[in-house]
Image (tube, rainbow, N blue to C red):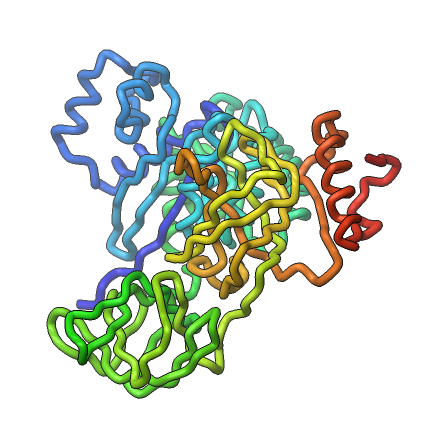
Amino acid sequence: MAEKPLLRISTAGSVDDGKSTLIGRLLFDTKTVWEDNLEEITRSKVNRASHGIDFSLLTDGLRAEREQGITIDVAYRYFSTPRRQFIVADTPGHEQYTRNMATGASTCDLAIILLDARKGVLEQSRRHARIASLLGVRRLLFTVNKMDLVDFSQEVFDEIRAQAGPLLAEIDHVASDFIPVSALDGDNVATRSARTPWYAGPSLLELLETAEAPAPPVARPFRFPVQVVIRPHLDFRGYAGQVVSGRVSKGDAVVALPSGARSRVKRIVTFDGDLDEAFAPMSVTLELEDELDIARGDLLALPASAPQVARRLHTTVVWMSAEPLDGRKSYLLQHGTRVVPARLHGVASLNEIARVEVETAEALPYDTYRDNRATGGFILIDPITNLTLGAGLIESEVQTGQLQLQRYSDAPLTPAERRKLRALLAHMTRFGLKLDEEDFVEGEGI
């Protein structure tokens, strides 16, 4: 029997929109809740449901989450139907946990954006939709929850849908659906509800079962970041790692980046014996016909579909540290298995999404994040504390002599941001660089 296809889902939205309750309801309706778990939450002293079972307790696993009635960490749950398997990430709604939401969305194929029928489209809902889009999620399901509290009003639903119009106009290449639900009562969650006769669309579960999943990693060009060089004896030199995308066969020509050295695959070695072919997401050891100077962090690819190589990149960064981004400091950038020193040119504070130029000490072989998540994303690390400060998405190479700065905010620059931009402009002037005119906000100088 063929294995059922897998769809990875994240939930997002503002505080108390009912994300955990919705996931709990899906688990309950698809009969993937253990009887002892159901009995435990039924007897729980922490029950916030106005009636019946508090389904949020099925996903809010931390003690602090259950006591406060909020989601703090990302909780992953599995469920399945006869048609499909699902892994769903329940992500926090509070603004201070936006970084957790970005973590949950980074590996997902589809995002459920919950909206409270009484509140409509809030700023945090917009932020989460933008982040999901930036992270490569191409399908958004706007789930208007708590419809029972507005008497299942079609007018309320249509108004919320209209509110989301400007947001969807900002996001490129994203398909969207709107569904009226009551997560607590199960209306339009697993089955269609008689209480919304004006809604002719499918239930949430029907949409999830029929949603088209993105192309699997094996369909993308071959990428093999080297994790370790293996030299058990003088007659063997192998490069161990994971095929993060594409496939490679014995005898294929390969190029090592960033050096550009070329060779052919002599052997594909595994613990169980040699293979004629390896594909994503297999972990293997490649032996090449020639002894090349390849180390951890280098990338093997097929010459005909090799990635680009650059040191200066336009990126979008989700900043996760309370300490603001500092253009004078050096950070560590981890891209796959490669870690290089880097400097950042831009402005960002905690949970802000910012356009940032990254300049690395060594050239990076990369794909844009839109084309390949595995080689288009990176994290930024504090070289002293080793803490992760931000996550970035590569958009393009910076053209010589140009530097673009942009924030995803219409707010005026703060005095501190103006001082940083003046210092950056002075630094650029010394090296003969310039800003494009369109990089300045109209009517606002620095």
